[in-house]
Image 1: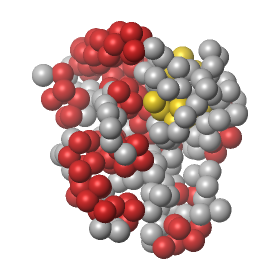
Image 2 (image 1 turned 90 degrees about the vertical axis):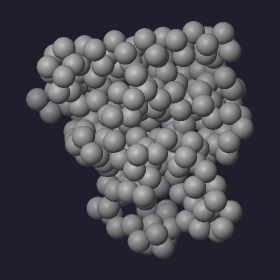
Image 3 (image 1 turned 120 degrees about the vertical axis):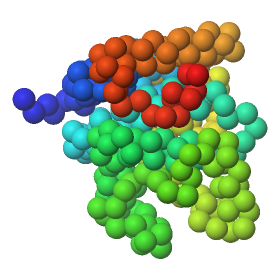
Length: 247
């Protein structure tokens, strides 16, 4: 049955994952779904909640939505929102996305959304043309030169490229999802007020909550990997980077 409600479509994607790719399903179902049309143009996660924009979700095909949900799950797996430190937020977000998108593409987890599915496609057509990106090209950041690298390694290369006025010096080079700073209740390095519901802005989290979250995520990842291996006889679609992380 075809679903038109954004919330129901995400729920269905999670159910499909539980059956087809249990590693992603186990981790996706633990995230609280929050409609955040007022501030989130696409999707975002903070390790506890998955925020979504209804228009963005409903602009995606089922396979594209699965890719995006898995992408958000992987930000939780690698705890990217807890590893920013003093880095440039935009470039760190780009580095994290390069790592995740390569892994998901290799494992054929859904399909990366096309560029024309991005909310800023029409107003940024000149930018996309300059970058040589057509409407049916991948809308996310993916590049084989970063294969096998950790986000920190990719970040160092992106900083160098930006300093030399390369591709990543352009402020518009970023992925579709909003990257959050849970402690400040903001996204993309900008300040935010935060609210308890998450509908008007990201929910703020205390340092104590973040410390607990780190441990909870570690346990959740290990449990999900074990469950996936048991259900698939060790042949589950778990990225190599995750297996290395667990070891």
